[in-house]
Image (tube, rainbow, N blue to C red; front, side, top):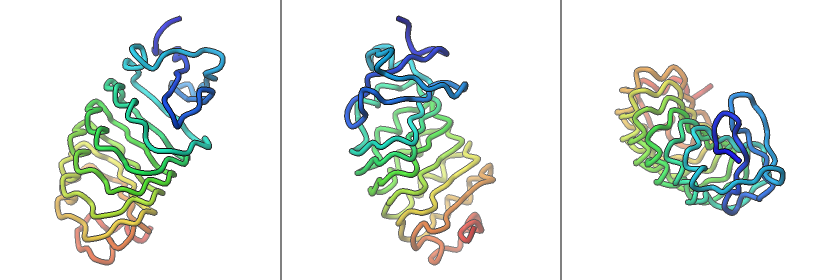
Length: 193
């Protein structure tokens, strides 16, 4: 029975995620097997505040069905094999404080709409194949303390607005493409790390 509280139960996720996916869904680093305790994605899944799916052999694109989880504060999908676009609908998850979508094969540009995530503190999009220029709107993420965009294929110059990220003590851009070679923004002392 039950919903998605601290004793988080497993969820039947949309493709490309398999039904038997093991998920870490609480701070206790507990893993649940969907074969044992399945539950529907909605309506109880919409109440989930933390979702972490890591180190799985999952191929396919970002499922739009996850956009119903508007109460998420922490959203981690890393070391999977997700392909295609980093979706703009992530910006509708306005309670997010942590967005970690790294170690995948995403190859789109970074959506400028991510700037709407005003509570965001950690942004990790590293180790993908993200392309295009860095949106200047990301300078609006005033609460961000850590940004990792390293190991991507970004181009253009770093927007001057990134110097507004005064709380960002971690900012990694090494191997992120041509950004570092073309930029003079002060926050870019992390290009060579």
